[in-house]
Image 1 (cartoon, rainbow over the protein chains, first blue to last red):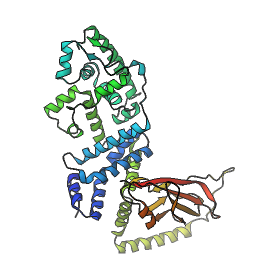
Image 2 (tube, rainbow over the protein chains, first blue to last red):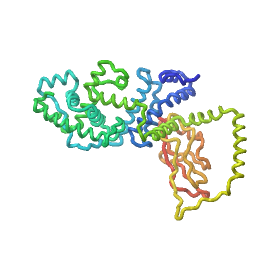
Image 3 (cartoon, each protein chain N blue to C red):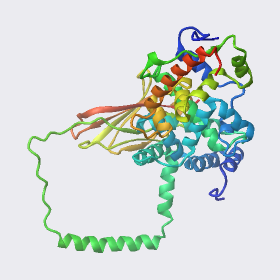
Image 4 (cartoon, chains in turn red, brown):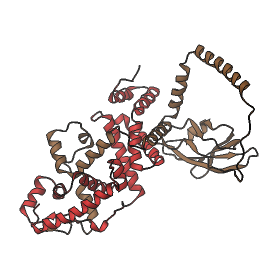
Length: 196
Length: 234
């Protein structure tokens, strides 16, 4: 039977019910569709092809091991992406304890609404106060870079590649301007008694 | 009143990380990857810097666009990954394509090659040796191991490495992590079927080391041995 036109999810279903030899063939057909995508992702994450190949190998080994557990609740490509993302972030945590920061001193403390009723309302109805400040203060790319750098602790060079930033200094320029804007915004918010 | 003193102490980086970590209401990767977000998901992303950034990351990852300058490296990583995951499938696929060529076509091609090759030999001038650059030295290299490396889905079926200039043969050793030898051989080839003693030793989660030393015609080692480890993923 030709599996050329089967969807990824159909291939996984067939894989689950196949004999060991056919399972391997089906996994090979399935993975063939995704080597380039995962290679591109890992390369942007790693920055060099040898590390990227190690990461991609681990991604597919994990996918192969857990293929029986794929429930079809999401697309296979999304499932594979989740494995790749986890693998890449895990690798990052093992190789460096703390990402570099071009302007460590400039990072403003997280503001917290203590007494102001309006600020409390923002915190309870819209989620988190800090997010509301980020939204009110930063441009879209600044916000994304800031969230990835300080939320996921991704190094700036990786963010530059992953978000395909094409400006001269990449994510570094956005993180510097984001921190300056945030520092100004927090001073302004303090002066207004915590109101955004 | 807003206070500049964060609740978690005096490390603003840690506090921002906490603020930007996923909250219970945050979207899963599957939800973030939806092509058409529903109203609730759009509203959440608009208010959540974390989910907005994750969505941007997914869209960039999902894009099939190759950036200028990364195409060759992406191709290499993809080929290398495939070779490491299903090496035998690749070999079978290539031999399968070859075998699908009709035999009469192979005979015809062979005959044509003989005729053209014979004509070329008769017409060509006498071969000359290239001049050796003054002061040139023989550069020794490390043996570049190809397979198996790292985590595997099944025990290795072959051991393969790149040829080294000047090597007459190669000594291959497979070892336990403590250095105890499992198997050794000497070969003139650059790949070998993994013997049963090695495939039996490659139990899940058990790391094995293998080492290849290039030898010259007098059995002297050339350059550095190539060393790699592998294990079948548990």
